[in-house]
Length: 304
Image 1 (spheres, rainbow, N blue to C red):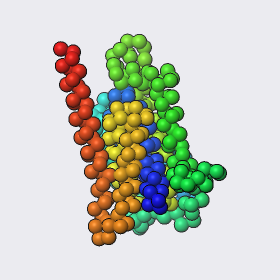
Image 2: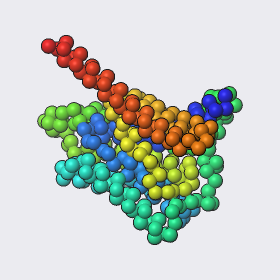
Image 3: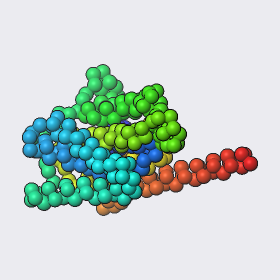
Image 4: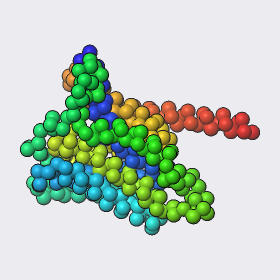
């Protein structure tokens, strides 16, 4: 029962930053903008929040600046990819490399390999929900998480409302599905693309703060470890649906939780379990691609 409780708790723990990236990235996906810079935006959010908290001893300011820094890189991405019509894959790759280089440069300048918030006790950020925390197993899953973790899961419903129940969400989808038609009815397509990318940047900044400052109280370069790319995989598997894409993100979080908890009993082979989330990501992407191809063939046959 203990290991089951640990796995389920860690599933929520590891899913939160991926879910946040997914919720931000779905808007760019729906606006037909391939934002592969989610990884870099999350990394700069993690770096900025920890560095600011280290210098000022103000965690709230660090989290705020994590969102601001991610928004700046979101603006750069939008300017290059939307306004100047650059190749969004190259622009996104450049941002991913640039954020890592900035963090590495600052760490070298500070003569350290990581930034540790020694004044901070991350256990203080855990929110224990009355009554629920006393329920066996369920209390282990739902209680004892930091604020941003709860925001990420509440955000699934919020983003669903924004995507499907507001004029803004409808316009973003129209821009992504047929940009010429959107222009013909007077929509400012670039504005909605900018807005979609910036929503993603904001969420990635929060994800970075959750990953570094709120959960660990430290930053080490490249600590995002491909979570931004896992979020992109979840978005494409879920076809940009807030609920389905988030479920895939939780699946990848479960894979990470399994790898962490099972590695405890693996002895010398513990390092092998680190590849489990990435193997599952490849398998899920393959399975989803096969199902989509099969459905397309069936529809094509019926249409003939």
